[in-house]
Amino acid sequence: MHKSIREARLRPEYAALYPYLHAGIWAPAARMAAAIIERVALTGLPRGVDPDARIMSDEHFEFRSGDPEARERPFAGRMTFRDCLAPQGGSGAAAEGSGGAFRRSSPSHLS
Image (cartoon, rainbow, N blue to C red; front, top):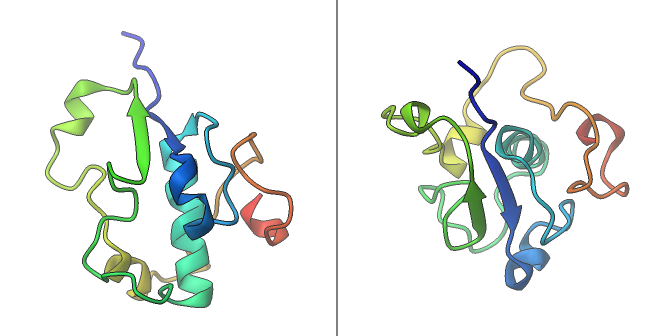
């Protein structure tokens, strides 16, 4: 059975909070999450961000498609900024590929 990939796009009104992402462009949610995780792991929490907030909140992002069963799993899509700061072992999560939602001005390992 074919399962579709969960996609996300950054809402334009929150673009300033994620300068390494392009607002309004659909991209795989996992890739966007990896870019956010990597940025937070490298630079720390942005000022004023609640460490227990989800890294991809419904307020900041729109979502579509994806496997409905995967969304029902307890941890699916519920990673917080605090989780990004925890030791991950190895080199951490890096976004694979560039995709249109990622800005070229980001470090090369994020694109």
